[in-house]
Length: 74
Image (cartoon, rainbow, N blue to C red; front, side, top):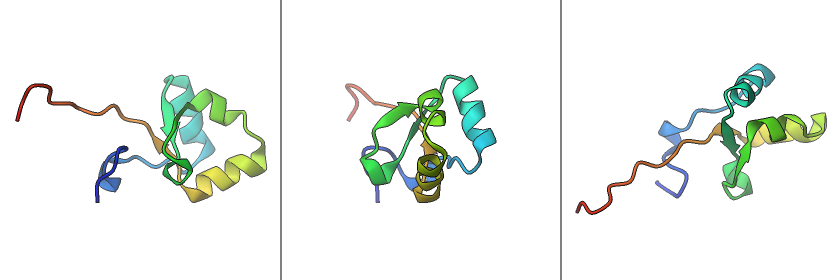
């Protein structure tokens, strides 16, 4: 099943604080599909309260990837 954020096989899950920290250092964004898939800067997400951050990671947090578009091609 495909949706606006891509197939699950293409998504890279954030499992640890270290992975989230590295994403913030690399100026990446993360998405949480269960919250509607809105992309948020990883540095902003790192500043969430610990209990909230734990719940977000438990429910699924993924690195945001830009979509490849094929403009003008059928």
